[in-house]
Image: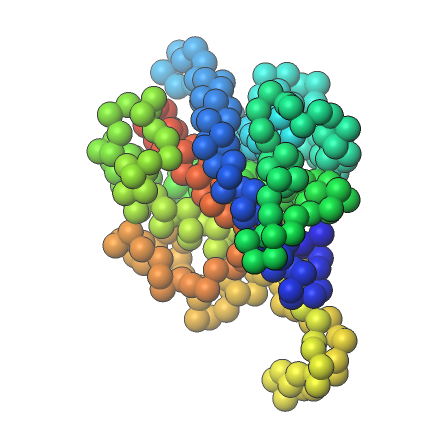
Length: 301
């Protein structure tokens, strides 16, 4: 599995395969994202209450449902329909999602559409012309759906949280979206969405503050060991710092959505907390969700 490969060459090989598969599936993935997000927004809008506002929503769970539906669709040609039905919602709180890669492996490759599972089978490393073995394909597909849905959900819910707590940022995002798109139906991956630099800056800042995957990112010391802060660690020792440490360090800590975003850039906030081959898919999903919410919904703060 790419996430646990210690050998740098093996790890880079697997990342190239996954990146190629994701790139080849980009147009189809976008269509699936848009379909699920439209359903998501429709569910958010119900009959207004007497005071003129819609009923309260548990955004954490709703976002978890829509991101799981998106990744199920894109990875395994299987939409769990969590947004509309309670039947499969238990999957959000368990590790059962990864086992679906075994189920998908038993199905014909002629699914309703060419999903990421098929794309992983077909992808070849541009440097070696090699592809994944059957077992590697199953493990990587399981990783994609677990990590992908979790990373998307974290970025989307965190962005909603911060924008609703920083009125000036929310109003600027809403104004930027409304000037870029004539209506919510026009929102999609395009040059117009790319031009929304302040929205992208907010998403990047939120992903810095709330990494999609928490915990330790271990690294094994190489031959000859390493000296860190006057302490020597010999070869073969696992070392690491919690991802949140990079956020709380004095030289990177700033007020969320602060003045550093005024120019629509977050270059001062690098380095990123993590680098992931799913980053583009995550950013696309989060951008479309936030843009659609800002365009179609009036959110009471």
